[in-house]
Amino acid sequence: MGRFNNTFSHPDGFVLVGFSEWPRLEMVLFVAVSTFYIMTLLGNSAIIFLSHLDPRLHTPMYFFLANLSFLDLCYTTSTVPQMLVNIQSHRRNISYTGCIAQLFVFLGLGSTECILLSIMAFDRYVAICRPLHYIVIMNSRFCQQMAAVAWGTGFSNSLVQTVLTFLLPRCGQYRVENFFCEVPAMLQLSCVDTRTNEVEMYAAVVIIKVIPVGLILFSYINIVRAVVGIQSTEGRKKAFNTCGSHLLVVVMFYGSAISGYAYMVPKSNSAKLKGKLLALFYGLVTPMLNPLIYTLRNRDVKGAVKKLLGREEQGWSTA
Image (spheres, rainbow, N blue to C red):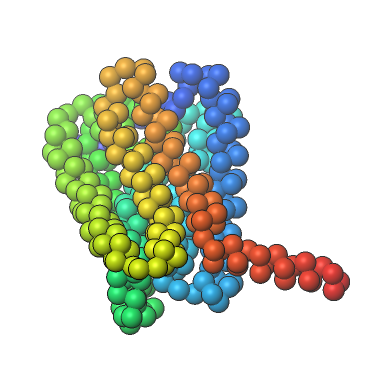
């Protein structure tokens, strides 16, 4: 019980150092992050809106895409507003309760996205490799169950890691070397051996990230085999276009997340800055780019946008 009480020894909670060591960079970041955040809100909201509004988008692919867009909205909102307030007001504090909630939500959403991306790869695998059975396999109930598994597993992992992380004593250390509360940064504050927590964290990485990556690779290996066997050039092009957007999102998300582990225990100011910029990339830039990638490369989404704009123009002309 004493171990847990040490967690709450500082009355002002934690101090999010963020980019305070680079004040000129902070002002540039404030403008850039504000712009990216607005684009993230607008782009992902548009995907959710279109997927519900247009009957042609009432398919498993767009059901999961709407889930991804909702996830990205929450993902960025869990960290970015706090970051912008800290930069603007120069008050770096976050309460203990706020830090716990932020870590739990951010980690839960990140874990869910890993699993959701693998489910979306499986959806593309069934669509291309088992087209005659697609409607039967990817029925509405199955899709909802798969989405529930992704969200449930992601937040279950987050609950375990959050509890284990905040049970560690910090002995008065409260400066978090990031712009938000995350597990690696919180482990650095502990004044006891954290090897058990690190082993648990890496085990969670295997379950939440490595296994989904394996499923994605399995899906795309089979997709490539199926596409190579298609005689029509137009058919092969259509199949690759169907998977191209998802594959690009996967590469961006996992690439930035895996790179971030190289700077998990920063040993220099340069490493600290690179680690924070990588965290900013997968926490803000990737969610902002996701709707753009799916919109620019997807004929159905373009059609839904044109149809919506056409209706609005018709309504305006009638008025």
